Length: 157
Image (tube, rainbow, N blue to C red; front, side):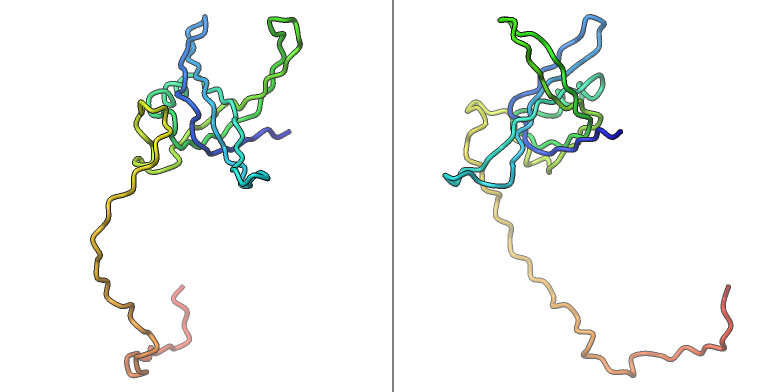
């Protein structure tokens, strides 16, 4: 059987690091992943996927990622059943992370903001124009530019 999940998106909130009663670190976070299509009103649709990371992976996520960071996760899909406060049976589905990676350049992972991460992105500074030499044209040369290699029919190996 195969249970493999790979997802890339932005963190919907800061990851939360907790410890179990046995002292294991566990982090919970949610990834907002664009569906790639729009609804009838032209709005982008996104899925909000809960993720759980354990031990060193949990520490890594909490240390280097915050709300709005682009993240790539691979792991496995897991479901749990439980009863809520009203006695109703519920099922929770989440990704249990095996590997977590940065999914964008450092500059695209925003620093924590006081506005809840909803500020308009800042434009990148303009770069000065660099004059590039034109690419050489290989069809412009003559056949005299090439030397004939003598071959006696022997293979070198």
